[in-house]
Length: 389
Image (tube, rainbow, N blue to C red):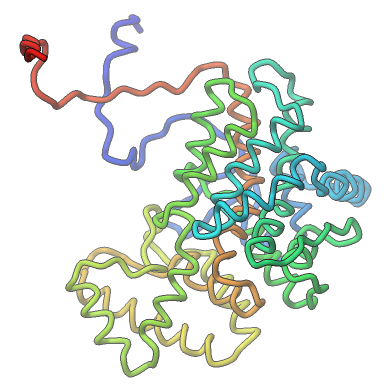
């Protein structure tokens, strides 16, 4: 193909919806089927039957570990959880500065400091082994950073990580200071696994764009965290629970939903840019929530049923179903997580998916550099005369 033709501008839909920008070996989302996978395995099956470390290993290495490999990987990653004194000493100021914005705001700065003190170099300048080492260090440190920032923001001392606990159990322990119950660990672990990766979402694509510049791994993750913090991306689990609170009782569901739709408001926890079926992650999390049982779960199921029916009536043909955030919020609430930690908990898992994407993107030396169509006043126009001063 001639160079001029190869570089000719191509119009893309708003939001790049459906545009394939690269190839990946990490997984895919098949929205029409309601299915997604990590490598060659169903992500939901992995979430229901494997440990977080199993899936972390799979995302980084392409295969599930055997018993010896898993034990070595758990030991390797657990040893990376503690923070350096420089980073630890800076966290109180970061927690104070981000008191209103929350742990994700502090995490952006903390990750930059972490990468600098760890000596992260541009991905362009290091080999695959060093990239993997940097990625493991960052993924292991993010839960420690998030829980420390949260506790400091609440006027509490951070809890040091424990190497004898698995990834999910240690996260809950650092958050609460108490060893969690097995059913809480398994519920949160399933949630964490189910959110490790999910195609070329906004934060993953952001991470890959930054990676394509050759920047260091911390810079790539900081950009991803910034994208995740938006309420239209990772900020929805707590907002979905806020919806349940706003509705209040079953007799108010219909009126609340109708009023919201007529105002043009978005109902958090419903609808997805890719799925045209029920989100498979929500199906799994609903099952986990129902195992806990209780009034909150019963109410959530009632709201789900009525909202989907009303959306089908008020927005015919739109195929608006629950997404992962709806029951994710319910499960995290049942496990005792504070709502301000719902999105950070999502981040504690997604950092593994981001890092796997960063490692894959770093293999390609081509910078991601799209174009835009200019629609402003036609140039060039004469400059106006400078007024006397």
